[in-house]
Structure formats: structure tokens, C-alpha cells
Amino acid sequence: MRVTRDVLQVHNVHRTYDSGTVQVHALRGVSFRVTRGEMVAIMGPSGSGKSTLMHILGCLDRPTAGQYLIDDEDVSDRDDDQLAALRNQFLGFIFQEFNLLPGAPAIQNVMLPLTYRKMGQGERKKRALDALQQVDLGHRVDHKPSQLSGGQKQRVAVARSLATDPAILLADEPTGNLDTTSQDDLMQLLEELNAEGMTVVVVTHEEDVAVHCQRIVHLIDGEIISDSPVQEVMES
Ligand SMILES: Nc1ncnc2c1ncn2[C@@H]1O[C@H](COP(=O)(O)OP(=O)(O)O)[C@@H](O)[C@H]1O
Ligand SMILES: [Mg+2]
Image (cartoon, rainbow, N blue to C red):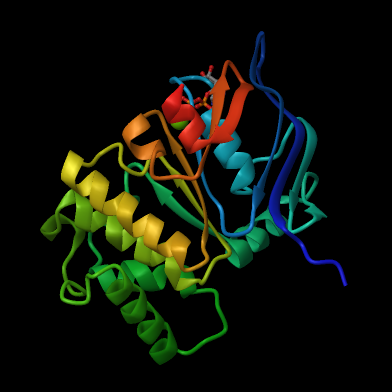
């Protein structure tokens, strides 16, 4: 039996946005792999293609050319329904803007991705409670987002992503709306989850965030200019 080590593989991926007269080459032949249990940062200046790459990794978008494999399976040409199923099965998301339902208490926000799972209301609630406890928010389950700090909101979002028990956590600028203390807390939480076996990919343009990862992939103008262990990047 073959044991998969690379949970994600990106082979020569291009993504071109075609808006009538103008073409934007957001990704120009990007290749890299993420090993199971790794914590990787994708860095680069604004407009370098980080979110475009994240959307492809997250099965929210497809490459214009090239291959994307999850668990050794080529998913480059899946249709929208198939991509949705992959997201549901493998992926957890954390966004800069938290993307919580403002009117719903934390527990309901965390239960939301379980809506389409075959499980009863009681099981959903139990999972959501477990996830909120895992991010130290067991005492805030009935609070709405407006009653929570930025750091707490982002931890609710982490709990929401954990509730479905994903293989991979994808975070796009997760600390972009957080103060320095909450930023460090959040990165520590992601490190803990990673230490427990979660594969984590974090997009950031901040070095303070990237140093929490083991490896840094650096994008400029849609191309990878370096892919190195974090120690090497920090020493150079
Ligand atoms: N939907 C889109 N349509 C056209 N151009 C886009 C679209 N999304 C992103 N772009 C362009 O692609 C490039 C990369 O964008 P993006 O992936 O958002 O970069 P980053 O996340 O690193 O800031 C930019 O030039 C941006 O303007
Ligand atoms: Mg972006």
C-alpha cells in the first residue's frame, strides 16, 4: 500500500483572469507540495497572487492550467458540486474578516458547517461545543460576534473550521484584523493544532506571522521566488 505524504501538490499552476480586454496573469507556473502535518506560510506583497493561490488550494477556484492534487488525486478539473464536496470533506477555512453571522451566537456559527452532515441536532451541538472548548471559548458559546473581541471572533472562526474535522486548515491573512496580542494568541493556537497533527497553510504578508510556521513559500508577481525552512529565511 502506498502511504501519501504530500497532502497537497501544486504542479505548474497558472491562473489568468480574463476580464474582456485585459488579462491578468495572477499565477505564472507555481509548483510546491505540502506534507501532511506541516505548517506552511505563503508570503508575498499585495497583488502577488496569494489569495488566488489560496482559492485554488481551497477548491474555491480552478487553475487555468496545471494540476492541483489533494491526497494524490487530481482535482484540477472538478465541477462546482465536486469542489464543494472536497471543501466539505477536507478543508477548513479562516478568513481575515472572520466571516461570522453577526446575528447568531458563537455556538450557531460553529454549528453552521455541520448543517449538511448526516447527524442529529444533538450531535451537531456537541461537536460545536467541543470545538469552542478547544479554542478556549467554552464560556462564550451564547455570545454574538458583536459581544466578542476581534481575537475571540477569530477563535470562533477557528472553532467553526474545526467542527468538520478537516485534514487541512487554510487561513488567508487570519491576523489582518487583529492587534499584536491577539495575533500572537491566534498563531499560538494554530501552532497547537498543528502540533496535534493538523496541516496548516497560512497566507500572510507579515513576517511576525510567518515565523510561527516551519516553512515559507515566497510569491512575487505570481511566481515562487523561494521556498525554504523558516530558520533559513530568518538567518538571511
Ligand atoms: N477576480 C479577479 N479578476 C481580475 N483580476 C483579479 C481577480 N482577483 C485577483 N485579481 C488580480 O490578480 C492579482 C493577484 O491578486 P491576489 O491573488 O488577490 O493577490 P494577493 O492576495 O497576494 O494580494 C492582482 O493583480 C489582482 O488585481
Ligand atoms: Mg489577498
